[in-house]
Length: 369
Image 1 (tube, rainbow, N blue to C red):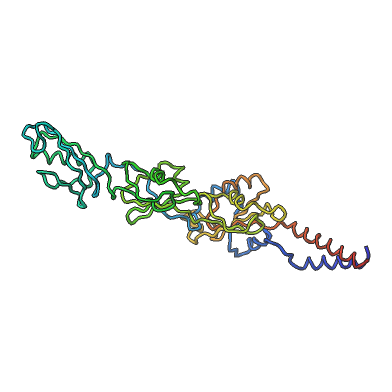
Image 2: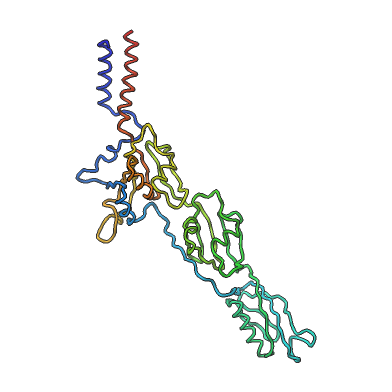
């Protein structure tokens, strides 16, 4: 090779060694540069099998849902009569001197009546009788007791149909929103959603919110499916909303995409996250340098009372080139607002340099000719 070409190549090599080459992501050593300083501002933890049990005891981060939930309980025995319900009463009496029946027909069917806002119904010869808030069986017993004062031998049949107050509202996130009567004493959340046509299939990671009085409860639909004992019993006046949960993580560096990723399900592992972002770049990524950056509240930092990280800023390192790293990544849970960062492979610098040398050598060859 002519001296000019060797000199030009040597000059290029020295120049490349003295400057930073253009890259799409940082090296792992660059991100963790201050790890071993006297005053590091972050802690580093490799994601391994032994570490998983440790991190599971740490507090959650990323504005995780703070809503509580109410477990399932058994509803009242029999339908509860409420204001606005319609009541039908039939009175049976064999007494020849009955005030309510005659010699031919021994049954008197009263006109259907609506329970007043104060919970009363009106009965002939008896006046107002309070039945609101009672089960059908208890209401029948109370009417029977009142009727005994005018017709001791009479027996009654008592039925009620639910009114507008005896219902729940399916507000949003289902195919047929609206007001639905509580036709069963043990109607649950999932039963009501079924009546409404089911959850809107376009919602990602749907979350159920139950508005009861002045209290709001919440749970993910996936958790509800996995735990039937949490399929809570509804009460009259409950309002149910289904929404896409606003949980996301970030992906940057030598990944398939650099973007904000919404949770498609209630829990996402590190391997799930890498799959959602299209994996890592085959040509650029360092398989031993997948980083997950997370920030804990200062109150979560290790002390004598709680389990937590050494510092509020934490970097978890994942080694996708080892079996332990792969298995552990499949069990390491990504928290909302985590940053999944694929660092650049150090060999890319060498590839870039050789590529540039080849380009310069070709240029020098043309100049030499």
